[in-house]
Image (cartoon, rainbow over all chains, first blue to last red; front, top):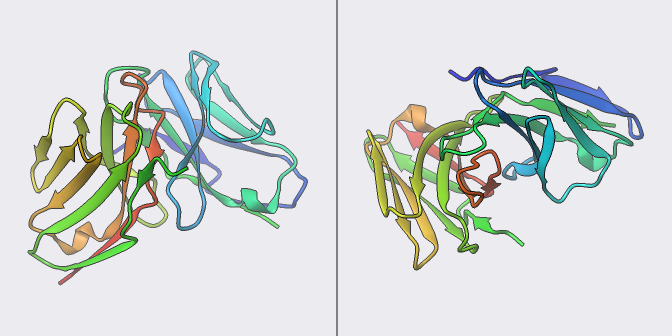
Length: 113
Length: 114
């Protein structure tokens, strides 16, 4: 059983609005990553945070931003929501190095209308 | 540019038989590969992994094979059980052990029939 929890589980927003998603990492993990999973696709890497600094970003625009807090919890913020932002957003916690697996939360289902 | 591909969207097998899920990749810099299983309304759950310096890793009913020259890996499940029915994702990492940065395939839906 993983200790990664995400909130909320479901969310409906209107196009143009802003949204904040939250993640609590597994105890001891120093890295948090965010993924977007569109329907019928695999998760796509958005970005990663390590020691409160962004540590790599995938092919996502700047309106996707994040924060990592000293207790390793994290936020994903999306501004100016578009209909295509509707997806499952997954948070994963891991160690920065060590070839150990990342643990995923259950995800937040975001619907933009 | 899909660096990790799972070309079979779905697979159906009979309980007790072998399930073989395939995955191809293009980036030779990937050094670690993982398989995740996902049930509806849940996050992906880690199954098994393999380092690029190995060609096989086994964990109970699950075995992953890696063919570096062909840039191909496969997951074998023997014997398959109805509870194995889920979406299986192949994922690759190429950042020196940083398994938070993963490139995923599109997934294969496995159905195990009783």
